[in-house]
Image 1: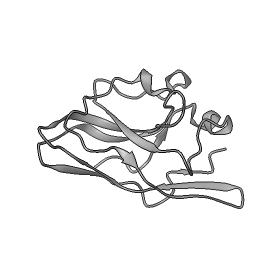
Image 2: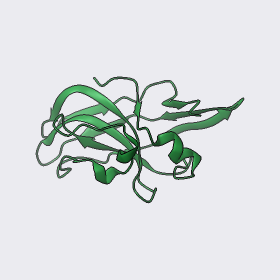
Image 3: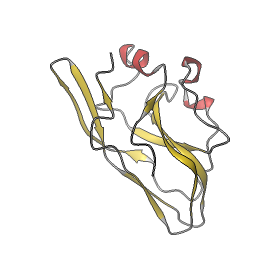
Length: 142
């Protein structure tokens, strides 16, 4: 079970302010990386290309549905749906981190990550639920 808290990349707020993310409309997805290749929060690590990802050969879709993207009284809230990763045709390579990124932004800018605490392997025909927190994933990001 991953941490229920999204750890933001340092560039996330600047990327929001500079219009790189339209979280209500852009397709978000999870990239997966193992314990040997952890995400680093520094501003220099905003683009997906700075990560060493696992191979997705046997992995189902990693796309995320946006459940709610709202603003109330100056506070923004993003709530995402759960994603079920399923292995088909073989196991999914071990991973520890599920990194949320924007598939539409020019550099596939990353938003934040969930940490499973140790590498996880999904065997052929098995599934793993990435359970998005029931509360706002991003809130009051100014």
